[in-house]
Image (cartoon, rainbow, N blue to C red; front, side, top):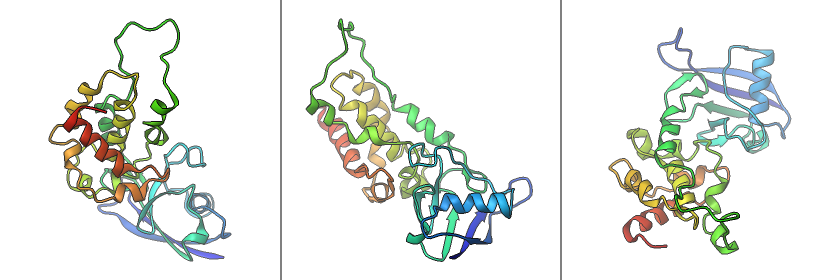
Length: 232
């Protein structure tokens, strides 16, 4: 099938503002959007720039706005989009070139919630044990691949770049509800600040955008309750 691929291009070395560029690509229905981008770069325009790594929906590096929705290019099939496909960089982060954005603000928010186990108690002779129920309590958050699809679909993040964003809050949830962790109050400082969890307006964009089907909005609400009641 013949596909019209429209890509929002921007090269800071020569462009004052982004512009659309259209390519005609021969594709199979089961091709992925990532395959189309590779075909364009290999056969039509070597200057096209985008990120990718594993190509299997695990690394999260190829999150893009595809036909108006945040998706992973490696998981989105042509047959689900039709003969005209638009591709843009994810919103709310500075565009470096074409589909590549500066992820540093996103990872700065990630670091702010201390996304690692904090426990200063004397270590046990063996590993710190958990029951299956205790492990299940934070299971959703372990599935996050830091693709930024949820955060860059959030209208609060679009207008307030200081907002920690859904992904960072999900990462905080993963450790707040970990029975082995003792660092919740350190995380509460960042989460309870003016740019923290209370900026969330429960729009559900984040949940709809997540390629891993994490109930992001639910986890954000659970973090809010944890801060309010400080009990689990």
